[in-house]
Amino acid sequence: MTTFLDMILGRQRVLVKANERVLALYRGEVLGIFGPGEHALPNRRGMLELERHDVNRPAFASAYEKPLFDTLPEVARRELTVFRTNSREVAVVERDGELHTVLAPNQKLVVWNAAGPWTETRVDLKDRLDIDPELMRRLTRARRTELTTAFIVNDGQVGLLFVDGMNQRTLEPGMHAFWNVGKTIQVRVVDLKRQSLDVTGQELLTRDKVTIRVNISAEFRVADPLKAVSEVKDFADALYRALQFAFRQTLGTLTLDQILERKVTVNAEAAEKVRADMAAIGIEVSAIELKDVILPGEMRDLLNQVVAAEKQAEANIIRRREETNATRSLLNTAKVMAENPVMLRLKELEALEAIAGKVERLTIHNGTAGLMNDIVQLRDK
Image (cartoon, rainbow, N blue to C red; front, side, top):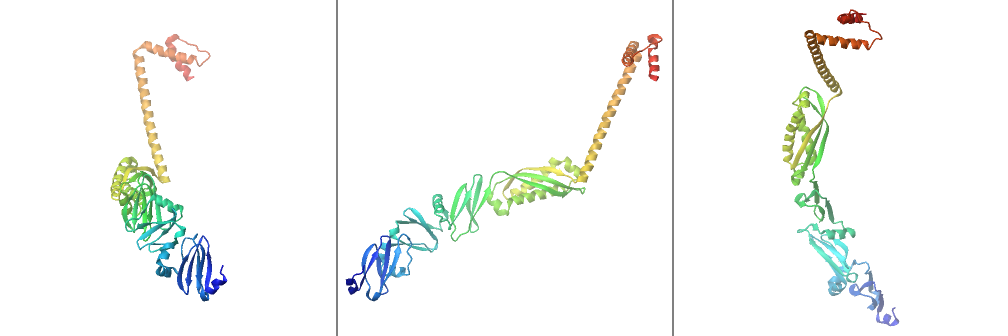
């Protein structure tokens, strides 16, 4: 509290709390920075100016920063720490072991020493863009990721790192983080596992002018990731189009009957062309299969009729063959009976037995000698 004596002497008593620092100016000039306690400061004619700062807010911001460092550099160094980056640096600033902020290139931060202790880690972006995984986790927890870019590469994949459009290297599975200040960072993730691709409902015209649709299936894997992403815009789309073109070109030179009869051969011819084209862009194609040949409705009906006619013809041939065999068997039996009277009598008795089983009463005249004649007469009646 300012006393009467202080007023006579032209002084003002200033009380500074434990969490405060006071920047004082007298007659427009920096007087100093004053810490906790009571201070008697000159104030003739009300020329004393006070600027209070709460050190719980660590950053120092004042219009008198430059005059302070110019006129009282030792006082400034005792109370304040300055972090400054050049045009190719970033700085990770920590406060009492906790990540406080990240400075981009050409930035400055002035903090109160009393709010520390303070440490910093500088990164030269010319030599290193990678961020240590542990540091990246800390940046994420502190929500200070605005200057970073992170990518995940899973098992069975590789990542291709591009900086400003230029390929730098291949990334193995794991998490990868980079400083993106002044640079354009891209990572193309490429799956190296074997994959399948289906081309369904592909329409084409056969040599005999029949429109058919085919379903094609292929298995492939990326053998050269860099070539696969740099030679074409989309290697899966390139494979799709290669399958379309190869099968359309191959099947278009064949008739419908040839396609249906030579399915395996057609696959081999078309597959060789596809494999050669895709190997040039780093894609290894293994199995290629022409899965289905789909015909128009009227063509299916015609083919069904042809198949039915073929089956009917086969059935007629089998029937005639059986009738011929039966006639031949009867002829052989007749020859045996003509040459053997005993056999003839046995056949007569078999016939008699068969007739007796179907009528209630049977009378035989003229003895067994006239049996066959009587049987004939019975059949006539």
